[in-house]
Amino acid sequence: MFLHGIEIKILTTKKQLEFLKLIVRDLETIDFRTLSIFVTTCRLMSLTRCADEMSLPKSTVSKAISKLEEHLQTRLLERSTRSIQMTEAGQVILGRAHKS
Image (tube, rainbow, N blue to C red; front, side, top):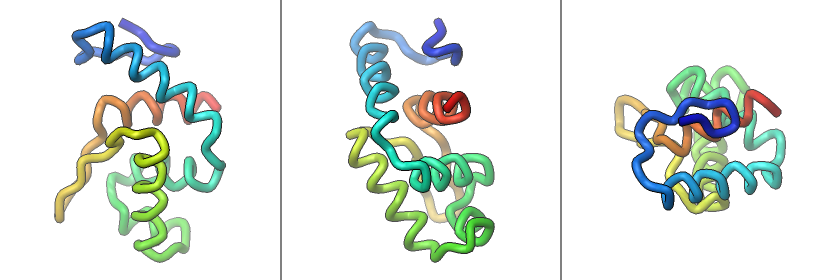
């Protein structure tokens, strides 16, 4: 199954697909800086490396990701003390951000 040209392998219900479509629509209201922070974090798979690359405090990166998740009302990244993983929604948003 594809959503905006991005293959979605894990989706199993129509409700989940509709939810992801709403997230993609909301993406158009996000400012460029926040989106850049999210994309860079995903590329580097590290909040610390993102902060270093963008010359920002780590707290700014973390807050930007949290505000984006709050705005979209979904988790984009699963964080642990040693790693981060993108959720399905995070993968969709990343793919959409690359198209913007």
